[in-house]
Amino acid sequence: MPFGPEWMATGFEYCPVYYPDGSEFYFARFLTEENHWRIHYSTLIDGDWSPPTLAPFGGEYNESNPAFTADGSRVYWCTNRPMIGDGPGTENWNIWYAERQGDTWGPPTFLEGGVNTDSYEDYPVVTPEGNLIFTSNKPGGMGGLDIYEAILVDGEVVEVRNLGDSINTAADDFDAMYAVSNQLVFVRGDGVSSNQLFVSYRNIAGDWMEAKALGEVINSGEFQYGPKMSLDKQFFLFTRSGDEIPRTTYWVHSSVLEHYR
Image (cartoon, rainbow, N blue to C red; front, side):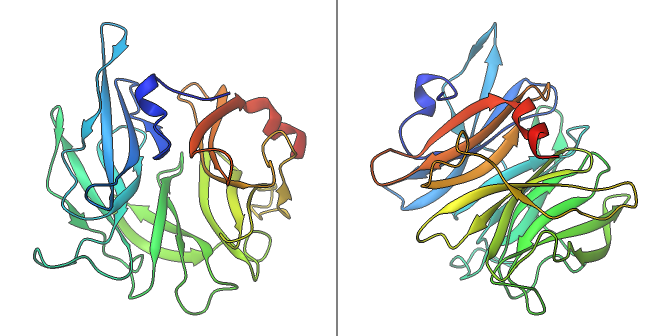
């Protein structure tokens, strides 16, 4: 079923995510007058969500896919903001971050340490262990888009590694969700004919098992993407679009994912 207040269903929103304490709700909205994706957020006030406004860490560039650390001290997102200065947006997207400062955010900062390259980096998500899962089409991968993990120590990237052939294929593998330890949900497809959601689990040896496609309840045969989990881990959220339906966020009970373990 559709998710969110009435203002969340214009047909131009995706990648919803809560701030860790549940007081704020973030998502990307396409602004037709600017021809840009911009991150918006809403605040929970006396039980009601405020009308959405632009996120304070954004800018005059395309941006989407916000992701928070567990303690809410840092937000990551992807953008075509130039690495230096305020010039035109770049052809490829990279991952940036900002630090929480009271009830707002500090300045946007380019993520160093080997995550960002001259290629396309997108879809950041923070694992429960504090590492960063992201997507890139950098050279040396297994297909067009591959999923990677950046290992962080004290907020600094110390290692970047490809998740391997149980996850990545010759197709595009991207847009991952790692809300529960050792469970990875992601998109596989070409973005032209269809995108389907897959899930993989990491075994006791620490290796990812072969990914399985989610069933027809989730994969409608059209485009599925933006997998997310509710704060209480009870509900699995995703976005669906197609020729006959607008881009809309849906939810199901998260127990459906256990059927594929």
